[in-house]
Length: 319
Image 1 (tube, rainbow, N blue to C red):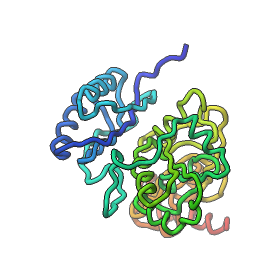
Image 2 (tube, one colour; image 1 turned 45 degrees about the horizontal axis):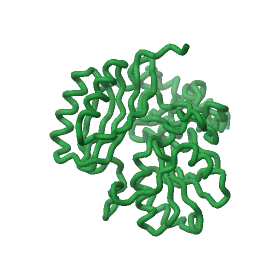
Image 3 (cartoon, rainbow, N blue to C red; image 1 turned 120 degrees about the vertical axis):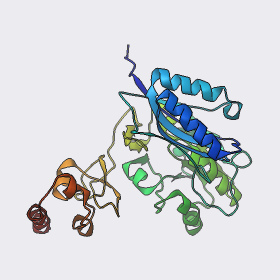
């Protein structure tokens, strides 16, 4: 029998009315701290979007309290086992929106959203020829892992997605549209926006990639790579049947699933990079970032000017 790990990571969201997000956020932070949870929770008038970690007992108490609050009746928690906390601190922040689309006329998923498909139905729909699969996440999330045949919109943030769709509508015309994201929250709004734009056959993966990977029937099949998560784990497996690495090292193009942030704090771009190349390239995505006076890798490793010059020379010699 498999042993249960001592910690859990919870992922959840719910579109529901929260009258005073600022007041709720302050009280909720106090409550989470009393349970010694760590994580990041966003609160808006339209609902809650959170991920947090704690012991089995702490997370049980949290879920019980949430389920007992009539505002969160029916909330679904996606649960991962973990060896320890997945976050360093606990943050609960009020926001204008749970996911930033910044539409002039906002979407209420209770009024308009795409059809929900459970993992098995989504799996079957992906195999149909007249289907187009749209990844509703950011570019760096897609680069680490995605469904086979999925389209990667050329965007750096979720709010750019509507414009991308309008500029590439010929890709979608006459097709059945499938959308997916990490836990489902982005697709609730995005699929609703697609329906409002006039697309007739729009479906979304219910519960997102995380639910798909845990489903005992599909077992994450048709997923390549790993799923990017916004905590210290960075990546979690999805496909239980085979592991295909799709990520490519920023510097060499070799298979890679290790994300680091560019060492120039003014850039901070997420790049896939091996430990060897992190050292060789001073964890910087470009020459400009390598020579930044604020290069965090140089500062952290207390490299001298001579050592930095030698590293730059080695990079030039290897071109």
